Amino acid sequence: MIIAYVRWSDAAFQDESVRLQYFDNECILEEVGILVRETPTHISLAMDYNASDDSYRHVCHIPKKMILEMRTVKVEEMKKYKCQ
Image (cartoon, rainbow, N blue to C red):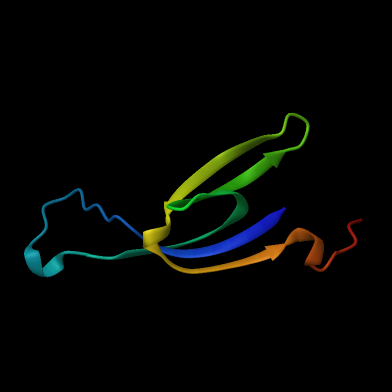
């Protein structure tokens, strides 16, 4: 399993009347999740994985053209903490 951190530019929406000088043109988001799939054009990150039925929840599909930075780590390589 691979965990990914992605910093990406998303579309921005302003739902009230806005004068031109107050336009917010950029919306930079940061996501962390399980890297579920990677295609030539997109990546898919999931927040949850259910091993009992091999399903994912809260999946975000991000176009690669919008990714500003991406870092990954394999779960097996992460530091393991003892839980009580």
